[in-house]
Length: 131
Image 1 (tube, one colour):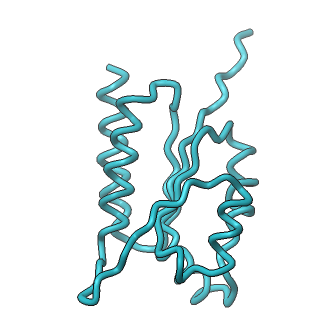
Image 2 (cartoon, rainbow, N blue to C red; image 1 turned 180 degrees about the horizontal axis):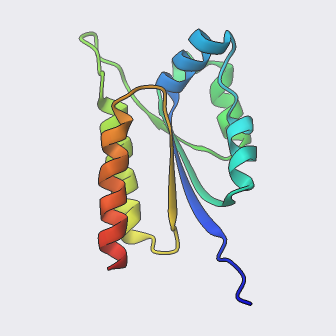
């Protein structure tokens, strides 16, 4: 019997959106450790990237550092930056799909509906890479 291949996970976190969603829904701050522990049951986490406005995140940025999450600064402009993190996240995940062949699963943690299009693009790229 052949052992099932363990997933190699790349985790991308849209921090600002998930923080708002968790705060509005559960009344508390987003806890990255809960997500990472749940994902460890699915496979090996090989990279973790979070996008957010870190000076405004306060203690949350320290939590990301404690869990070795690479933090990408998103500067919100006065007129807003509605899909900026989504675009960065999708481009980074797409690049990783083509350049890091050992990664065979992508996890996007977000709190808005626009992330669905990102998932579709990444899925198609992963299929094309494996064809």
